[in-house]
Length: 292
Image 1 (tube, rainbow, N blue to C red):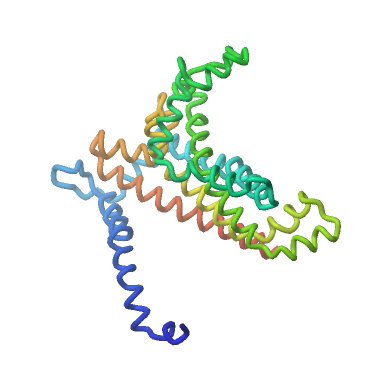
Image 2 (cartoon, rainbow, N blue to C red):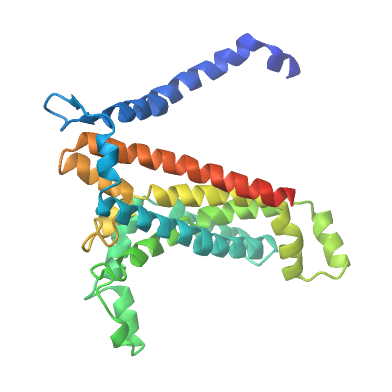
């Protein structure tokens, strides 16, 4: 094994094809989008170089800022609602419960279901006439709480977030669960011998020891929220009156509806830089916390 690791030709033989493939499907399109963002182009007629005008237009567009703000709200909700729920479930399962394997698999099932299928499922749940949510409220005598959840600007974004939580809560739960299970049982037993309760063991022993996994999940949750598209596209298409608009959906509309390829490419570059910036910030914050 050590000899193979010292063989640079063998390393290149295995690494270079993957690197070429990565550049072909990831890096090259990014550079192409960066080039398109400097053009005034509708995808058909001859492109015209306009420099940073698309970026200036983007930062002067109130709808763009509305979309960015919505994506920030989704990211905050993912970090402060989705991840804590996932953590609690993971710690409960890792602590040993009857039917542990069943619950672990059951919570993970939504992750492997297509986002399109989940969106259509929740469309039925939210339906104002025969949806399960409104029917349930009616059965409980809470008719005043009934509303058109996806058609109300005050609830549309939150209604889109609920399926996102439901779909990916099992994903983060499984990551936390695997990290907690990797901790040596002797450490847990030592804490219990010292008189620590299960709650204290979770807060003082398990959580501090799985900080690297928490950092990874925070990054995944933020990036997933910033580039969310499919669920919102099917549930509301950014409506009503752009109440649930997000940057990726706005980019899609600029390309395929108004044919503003240059402007849409500028939004795409913004999303990429935004994700990289938040990744850098999260890593810095966690590195500082670990040093303390």
